[in-house]
Length: 126
Image (cartoon, rainbow, N blue to C red; front, side):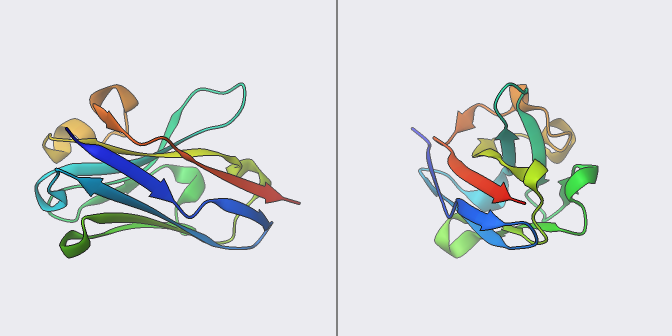
């Protein structure tokens, strides 16, 4: 059973930074896709960033040049470095995993990811 545990959320002012972490059990990061998704109140869940088994990455346009997804295979940990945060980044952030090829999971479609963490809240104030 794959278990994902996020941490690192919090409250920051606009322009600040946070680094989210996601630790997985019973999973091998190096051979699967990992992604970060977020959901704001009253809005649909959206994919933020994903990383594939060979290090390929994808981002939604609104976070490009501000967010960086990375992984430490030795620690089975996924990261999301978030810089220049904006109030519109406020949401619950979820880590997700998919035992798929990059072509199947790189599109940041939440339905393609079967494993999810419980989420960590990020609040950005203006």
